[in-house]
Amino acid sequence: MNQVSAVLRRAANGYVHWCPACEEMHILPDSWTFDGNLEKPTFQPSFKHEGGSTPGWCCHYVLTAGVLNFCSDCSHAMAGQSVPLPPIPAEHRDEAFQ
Image 1: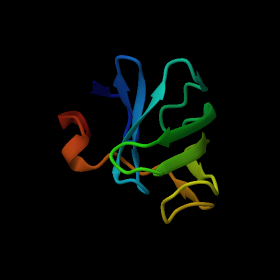
Image 2 (image 1 turned 180 degrees about the vertical axis):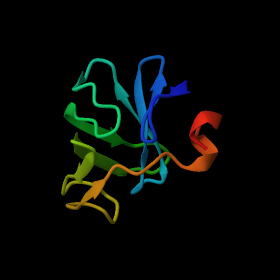
Image 3 (image 1 turned 90 degrees about the vertical axis):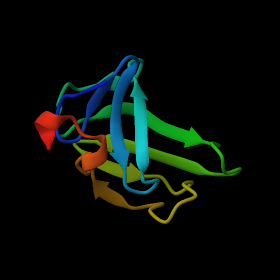
């Protein structure tokens, strides 16, 4: 993986960003439509991450012009909110973005 902007890293199969609601990195697959804007990206369709180690856990959002628009079916506290895509935290950044 290599960091391509303050908010995105490039992975083998997509782009990765920090989710402030889940406090972890999420991957958006290469099969999603991406507008190419590395600073304020738009990906389509929506992204829905479910399960993991917590049964019933769900993070569902649309990323448009650098804003995470969390859907109401999210199981976290940011459900229904819109927040700017935050910079990747220091512990996940490449040296060039420190």
